[in-house]
Structures are given as structure tokens and as C-alpha cells.
Image (cartoon, rainbow, N blue to C red; front, side, top):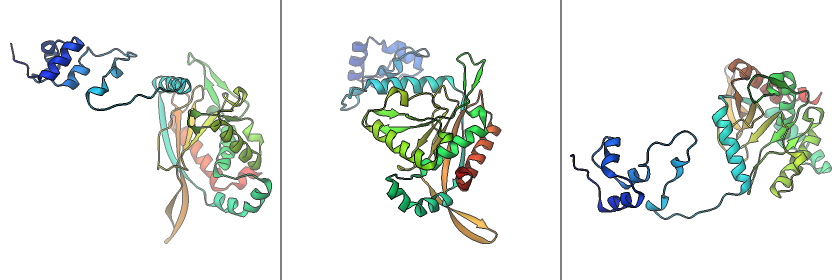
Length: 291
């Protein structure tokens, strides 16, 4: 029999966990066994098994434990299910936000008078609402059996809000029928109530699509997870200045990166590209949203 090399502490750990070192070494095809092999030394777990996480992390150094909230546990289960069940693809693009920034600057005085902070996110909500009307398959949900597509004749936009107790997604109802000032006021109110954990049940759920905005934090791109039963989600990151050539003349243009993740069972790549191109056009020329 081949001699197995393992430290006394590793052998002690194996005895405590009921792991036969010789059998483990044969399965791994090695003659040297370390403590990390013992912690993961049980037979490979089946799909859905929690054994992957059943590790004594304290064996490797000091640890502390922090319980997760019930809210976070529910969100984690939903995200894991979405990632496992949806064949997701992310399409990346960017949009010129120069016109939006000029409008926000020009309307600063009116914003103060109204007591409303006109953020770039309000323009994104308005643009998404109009894009969803132009592309009905994005404003849809797939039945649980995948055999029926439910097309919605309403446009509700979810806004992902990062809070101390977890991610919340309050919803702006009938966003396609609201003006920028009304949308901006609703964003502020929903975000404040989400932070205070005072969002009502009627203000959650039923979104056509969700926007998750990391622009205030940073990043150049990411892959947001579709929030079922929606079929797509739009991610936004920090605006950056990009050099665009106008003939032989370089021109700095503020561009916002856009990340559209979609359910490939419902939406194909060409549709996603057309959707973001249309969306980018609305952002680049917001006059089309003010009509």
C-alpha cells in the first residue's frame, strides 16, 4: 500500500470528521493530504446540496459570524433561482448624456422652486418607459412552463435601491404616462421610504423592467441578474468622458455605460441591440421624451 503523507493535525482532523485518509487520497489521486482536503473530503455533492458550504472556516484563521436578515435570505433565494433557471445574456452599449446634463443645469432654478432634485435617473426611467412601449417583448413575462408569453399593456419601472437591510425594488407605476418632474419626485420618495423600510406592499412588485444604477458608486460595466418574472434588467454605471472624432476634430463626449441583461428564451441578441440603440437615442436627444 502506498504511504500517505499527512501531518498529525491533518490526521486528527480526519478522525474528527470521520474521513478515511487512504480512501480520500485514492479518490483524489494523490499521496499528500492537507487539511483543506479533509474539509472538502466528502463525496462530491449533488446539485442543490449545501455541502459545498459546509466548511469549518475557523480552521484557516479567525472568523466572526453575522446572521443574515430574513429579507436578505429571501432575496438570495430569488437571485439564485433566477441565475439557475434563466439563460441570461448581457448586451453592453453606451449613450451620450451631454444633452441631459445641459438640461439639468438649465433647469436647476426650476428644480429648486419645485423642491425636486432632477437626477439623471429620472431621464433613464422616462427613456426606459418609452423604449418598453416601442419594444413590447421586453415588456412581457414568460409563464412558469415557458409556453406562454404574457405581453403587458402597462409600463411599470422598478428602481433597485441599496439599503442597509438589503436590496429593495420599489416600482414607479405607469411611468410612460408621467413627466420628468413627477418621475423625479417619485424616485426620491420611494428611495427615502426604502431606506427607512417604509415601502408599502402596493409599491413593490409588478414591474415591467428594473433599473439598477451604480453610477453614484463607480464601475465601467457589470452583469445584472434578471429579476423574474421580468425578462430583462438595465444596469447603469458611472458616466465617463469619451473622445469622439468629428471628422479630424476630437470632441469629448460624456457617455454613460449601459448593461442590458435579458432572458434569451424570449429575447434574442439582435432585439437586445436594437432596444439599447433605441434607448441610447432617447437619452442622447431627450427632446423625444418631452413630447
